[in-house]
Amino acid sequence: MRNNLLFGTLFFISFSTFLSSRLSAQSPNAVLYEQTSEMGTLIVGYQRDVDAINDFYYPFSAGGYYSAPLTTLKSPVQRKRLQEINNDYLLKLKSAGFNTFSINGKVDYILLKKQIEASVFLLNQEEQSYKSLVKYFPFADTVYSLENLRRRGTYKDGALIAAELNATVKIIDSVSLDLNKTTKLSLDQLKTASNIAISLKHRLKGFYQFYMNYEPTFTWWVPKPYEKADLALDNYAKQFSAKQDSLMAANHDKLGIKGLPIGRDELIRQLNAELIPYTPKELIELAEKEFKFCDAELLKASAEMGFGKDWKKAQEKIKNSYVPLGKQPELIVKLQDDALKFIKANDLIDIPALAEETWGMVMMSAERQLVNPFFTGGREISISYPTNTMEEDDKLMSMRGNNPYFSRGTVQHELLPGHHYEYYINNRYKSYRDPFKTPFSIEGWSLYWELLLYDKGFAKTPEEKMGMLFWRMHRCARILFSLNYHLGKWTPQQSIDFLVDRVGHERANAEGEVRRSFQGNYSPLYQVAYLTGGLQLFALKNELVDGGKMSFKQFHDAVIKENLIPVEMIRATLINQPLTRDFSTSWKFYDKTSKP
Image (cartoon, rainbow, N blue to C red; front, side, top):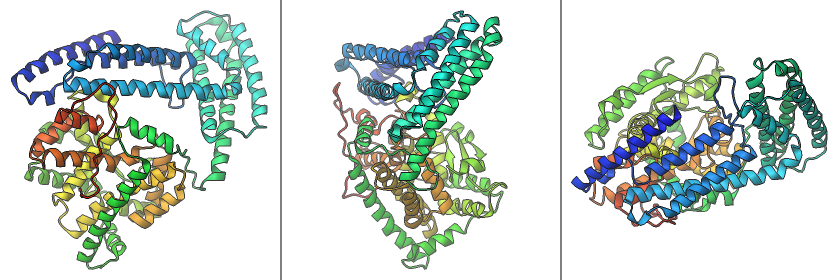
């Protein structure tokens, strides 16, 4: 089945290359809409080879599929094979005819090279972390060897396996006692060690599920020893987690928000990987400048509402404009319609009728609202509003935080022309670039529309302006609190207080936002990416649309059809920028003298 899918993908790419070359011969602008490039086959081949290695070496589940829980770290042999694949493809890149490629081919070359180099770095980092902790896992090789039996269904007498597992339990019990005597591990090491133990537990479970009930001697001898080993691994993982929680409680707040600051050097490495040529300090200065713009606009709106400079009182009035329970979905439809009417009236983008027809909505659970106090979106919009299981105070904060004026700037962010439109278009254009997507484009595109609509006068009344400015301040605040946290300067509690005092958040919503930022499955740069990515696209709009080189429709159509790759690479494509094999980020997109 996989071979058929790969053949179909490669046939599609080959045909698309032929078709796009024909289009390019007919029209100089057609290059913007090519579905692939000279690098398409190599990119798909790399992704499929990586998938094949991961599918084969990750744990096995009872349903017959390979599974990779979030806590499952790669095995030593899996890391080795991935590094070999990376080295193979780096050699292929060296022999590729880069200088003869189209601009799309050069961009794809750079993106694939950066992805492979990032993979090499992370695998080396993971290997070093594993080696620093291997003395705590003297039983790991036993689990890996049992898992290796499963991969080819090798027979081994159940009595021998049972003996191995019983011996493993004794080793785990011994190292568990030793672990209680040491507190020398860092937070990062404790987290990794816990994940190693959980990973071994998953791998042992996959081995057990494969043979159990099928192999007679296994089924007779192994269940009891397996249960003991499974429990021992679970308890061992919990020991590391408990030490991690204890160390965090000593160094951080008492909110139960579990984060791990990564430090300046790692922030800079990740910024370079995302093609952002700014230091954390420079991004903090950027956010502070943007905050000043918001402050000035906020005071104007507050004065128009009759509250003078007391913008918090004006904001309080807006918060209390929430719609009754049960009416929030109707509000979502109205706000989306308002945005689309404005966008069409200003001739900003052509949205296909099917994209308008097929966005959906779901209601967010109370549990999810603990980390997502506001709307989220994509194929559909997930609506954050009170449920019957919430405490009364939390219900009110949810309603106040998702009032019509605050929501005015976010519905189009989640739906059209925001995340739903991204989902719609990126499944149809250059979908092979999906592995290169970045939050600086994913969130940057949707945030760009907030900036553009405000700039174009979408917010007509002072209340509407304050509602959109709330979110703009929120994006500034995300840069400030997330970078300061990862630099070791702010705690989660300071971040929450900042959101409440400086932006006007309801406290429960601020706690949910910070919890989401620091202990969710997000990149440390994810919250930085919203405003930063939006400003990148706004700068590109200034260059190409305001510069008279493209209309709004041409610009928006060209940008979104490049897929969600780094904005600097989208820019390189649109301006046909000269590129080299060893490209590094250099586009200083933020002009400190101009406002978006």
